[in-house]
Image 1: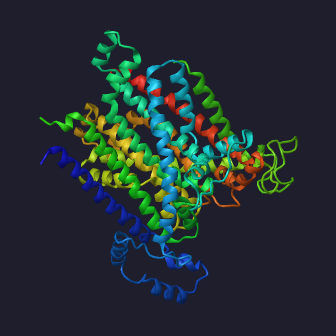
Image 2 (image 1 turned 30 degrees about the vertical axis):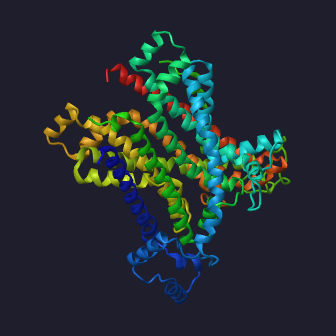
Image 3 (image 1 turned 60 degrees about the vertical axis):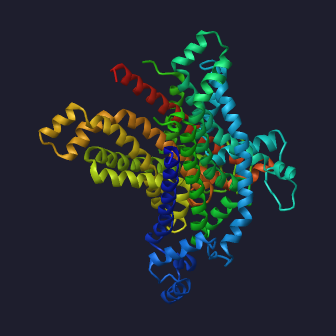
Length: 318
Length: 271
């Protein structure tokens, strides 16, 4: 087998194993903590009899390991159980909201990735001069802001100071694509701000790293224009690190999306998760938590895989 | 070495925030929970920053809120620091299965976003100050562990550590008397970054309604209380948001300066 393919398979299998361990942690970790679902539902004033009855109905008397495998089997076949608070199937509720979250995150990714790379290139082209300093200063400031603070600054600026947008992001099933796009404009701007800073700084660092090579000096000395040096000589060699930087930063969206959805009362997966943490609805939290963790781990594996594929030294082993 | 203006500004702001937190009882014009004015009054001579969603003085709540925010973030980052660095040094000096099992555990925790772990834990445990501090401390300790393990790995092979080993010093001596003093400067800059992370994390949790619970107030919770006013042009929610941003940026500036100083010192020593 080609060593590259073997390496890729190795990474993916390792990632899947990690995901399995994470599912154990999310399920059994909550079991190990004091208090259980039954006492969470009934509250502190529950009588011991009521607790015992509820534990019986919920199947909490079975050993934790058995319940874990039941749960895992359900997860793999798409059955996530029912929510404790309203008895509705969790998989159905997630299905309705998943699309909204993906739409929001997808828009943010589609804008932030090209923007980060272009800004990174500009910063490198004018390294140490005012465009570079301006971009670095602004991104340093946005890195220091938590997502919700950035969110309210943007809301205040774009709905009060310059009234261009609606402060609440609502999407309905019947809306046209453009109407949806208009509705999510503000949360997308916030997410882009949050992700862009890290992504751009790491892109800049990746290209600068390549710019120190001898062949870049040669290209400069033979009289190529600075943009041509970056575009033709630096960028092809920086693509591997840039790709993995971009994908790793997309993983930040997982956390960003949860908070931003709450800021804009956007009815999607993150909002659903937060609501049910407050209600102590453990099955919902476990299911949604596992989904977010899986996306995060998946993106990190993808970053690994992309950097392997983009690295010619690994593609043509001696 | 002269202190750059940005670091000086950062230091002044950070110092002001800390002093305001320590002497909150003396400088806050009104008590934390007294509804004295009308709802969402604009800034005036009586209420310097206006009033909040039920007519409480924002400046006073900001000062008391800063006390809680800074206290929780400081204790949890010190906890993270203590745990992370001692375990990191232990992993580096002991090696073997201790290093392996600690490092794999840290890999596992860092493979899941911190916020997701926190949400899962907080859906089971009661939300109290102790739970929040310990939870954030453990989540943050993973990053300190990685850094201190890497730093200690470099130091552990130095001649003076070898000499200490050969003259039969105990593990504790090697960690605290040989490695710690030499690893201190990168770790101090890290402490600043961990502190900011803790401020942002506890603010985010409180904003989501899962952090500091009323009647206590912290900055994230204050944003949550006042966020609905924003669409009517009431800027009350922006005050605590600005406070979070100002604290985070100023600590960042100081940490940046410490970091650049220690690396240039290292360069000066030739390695």
